[in-house]
Amino acid sequence: MSSKSVKQRGRQQRQRRRQAKAQKRKRSARAPAADSTWLPTLKMSEVISHLAEPLLEEHAETHEDTRRIISLTIAAWNLTLLPEEGRENERGVLAREMFGRSLCGVPLRPHQEAVDCFAQVCELVADRKRKFYPNLRHFILDVRFEPRDDDVYFEVMYSPDLSL
Image (cartoon, rainbow, N blue to C red; front, side, top):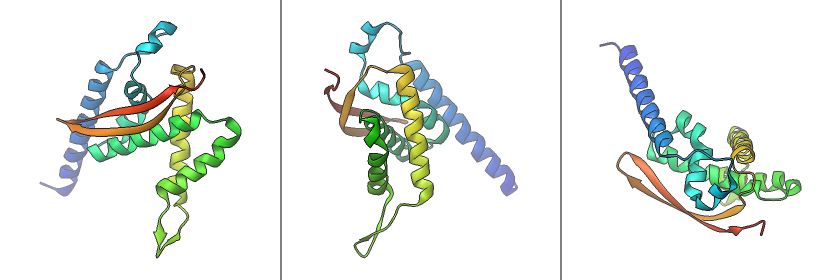
């Protein structure tokens, strides 16, 4: 069997796994309702999963990929809760903390591609938050991941609504 057909078969298998995971998430996810009475019953982990859905469908092949995407989505969510004038600066600080490295104790600038990717994630999350959860303002304080079967389960701890 040629290496090309092995690669194609591997790609097809990954695509089928992604599609199966996406279908599983769609079956378990609740669609946001226009009715504001729905918001108090929301679990923030479901909100984050819903916001991360396009990224998970496209990029999550392993449990570690899923954890990273969820973590980036949470960071982007929290940024949307900051005042607009300070958001850009905080995004830069976060990018340096998440993607920066050090060499012999000297901090290095993060790779520009990682910073640009994080900016795109932030824009996607902000757009989806405005569309689906415009009045939800819980700051996420912590996340706990737990692998389960063929998926990753996570719980978040969050603050009371910041708009109160």
